[in-house]
Amino acid sequence: QVQLVESGGGLVQAGGSLRLSCVVSGITSGINVMGWYRQDPGNQRELVASITKGGIANYRDSVKGRFTISRDNAKNTMYLQMNSLKPEDTAVYYCNAKDLLRGYDYWGQGTQVTVSS
Image (cartoon, rainbow, N blue to C red; front, side, top):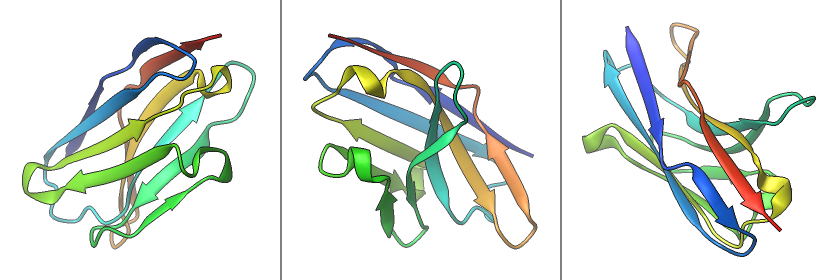
């Protein structure tokens, strides 16, 4: 079993910054790609950024240049540094980890990010 626990969400003014963390515990040896997703009411969950075990990162266009994803494999922790936040970034942010070999998909419980204008 794998457990993911997010932290770091909160309320921030537009233009501000937050850093999200996701700690992974359990049997983590099979984890390959990790990512951050977000979902606000009435919309589907969307991928914000992903990162491979080797550190290759991808971002959705709307956050490029503002968000940075990183991971510390030794600490089994993933981060999302969010700068220049906009009200449209408001959502519940979820941590995701994939075991591509076994076909498993793990999710955290989510952390709320609210950006006020």
